[in-house]
Image 1 (cartoon, rainbow, N blue to C red):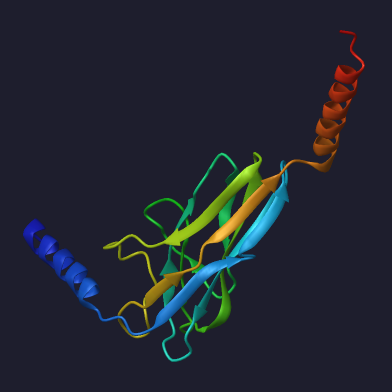
Image 2 (image 1 turned 120 degrees about the vertical axis):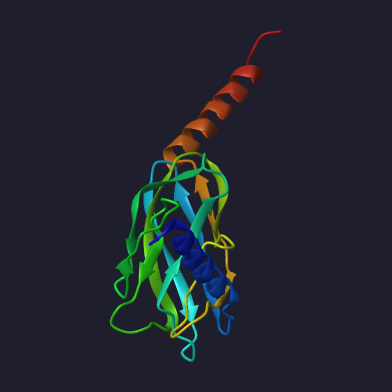
Length: 184
């Protein structure tokens, strides 16, 4: 097939995908939505979705952004939920999956589980999104089109280890006592 024919077919597929009407609203977020961890902990957070029964989906693809990557970092690859088969994600984040036997709907549907490391004291947001025009992202409907998606952010706070906090308080107390008993 000549290159011009292949380009024309690719352009047609892209235009058809962009032209598909959205019918359903899928809500994607995190479970737990708010989490507190101590520095050094490994922990998991699920990416979940509420998918309307009237408009089941054939798959999904998402982007995940950690607002402050100094606070937490992703460890390893995501584990795709049991209703899905992992799919290729061209952006390399491995957050894409397909359903083969039948389309999927329901509340609190597990999309993936991600392991994180709590690296530094602080707070960070977890943000899900889809890239406009990337047909490997979003929630394709059965039989055609893409669902509207609303995203609920996650929030992770990392606190010092209790022993470290006790040591800091003790050191501050010792310094205060020493200053009070210092001869002038």
